[in-house]
Length: 108
View 1 (tube, rainbow, N blue to C red):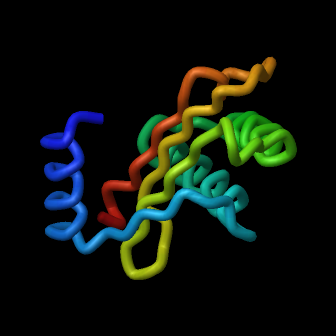
View 2: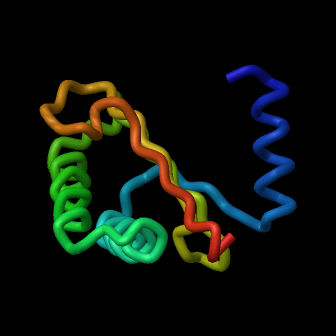
């Protein structure tokens, strides 16, 4: 990422009072699945099958996570996940291959 881009992100995060971590911690995958399920139900009317689909993709990501190749970042505010982005570089048969992004605007 270009230096100006990094500076912009740091400014944005400080204004929003967000923190960023890029390691998988216990509860991160489950909470991210929960957020996807509840937010997409509220905003788009998706049902439990969408949450199950996201949960399966994220579980696969966690099971095959390679810290030296895969990347996932969690944005947090008040120690709660408000967004995430992942970019796995290893080969997986799931749609998480490309990249997943999520931001819970009600918590930001």
